[in-house]
Image 1: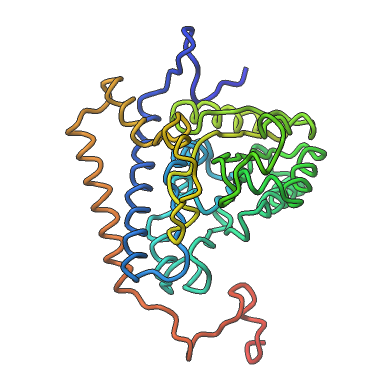
Image 2 (image 1 turned 30 degrees about the horizontal axis):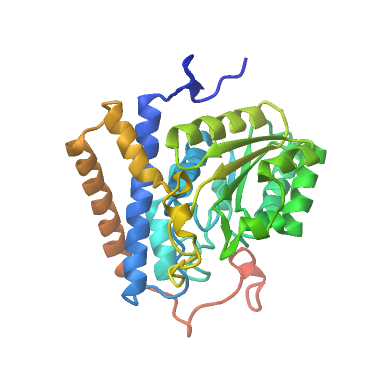
Length: 342
């Protein structure tokens, strides 16, 4: 019998192993501190381009990263910093990409959120509008052709992406081929500024799962324990050969679409509703209730996260950026095919 990472107790409450919960919380905390640093650097004019924060979606994202293992594939999007870190992305990767360092994974050549390490299973984002689902499908197909079994691919998207043709075509393909895909949808109530009431008429996006012939489940995206259980179960099912799994998380983006957006269109009633709960603060309260961490421990963890972020930023600020007069602007994988290199 397949068992999940997290199992419900007989009383109906969710019982989470302390070690797993603490690990996930500390990664969430690091992601929040790093996001806050990116936001302050952007406002100070130190970062060019867009800055997109994960605030409010860290619990969902980190649950993905901790459920995956070496050999799996993850296609994170603009609000998946916690998931990236949980899936072993070095903190320097994100900082280097935002500062355009030549030592980063994209060598200062691409946008702030378009980074990854494909050889290690972390795919670089092409677009957040459903495009990465088919990329994960392709990776899973390649592994099937190579007789590589036991791996899972996770793609994430927001509620707005579910209205695109890319979403439909890729999910339909995964369903027909019964790929070990887990598609996690962060229903954060807005596609940029368009509310869900203007996007779809079904009760919940999870209702679409039956139309594709796949399994679907919902989760409270503000509750770390729930996210760990539901996402963990979905990954286990996909790995066991149950076909694609659709996970729809209900939450609210606690910031604008990007730091350039004041989010004035968000309904104040939503902010004060359970959807608007801050997953990080709720996780801290859970830690206190379980007597897993007190005020001193929580403060110590925050200070450690702050030091990690400040050290990473200080390191990267001393690193070089591309020199437009000497850089060879060819694709890294095909540089050897350029003129004079044959």
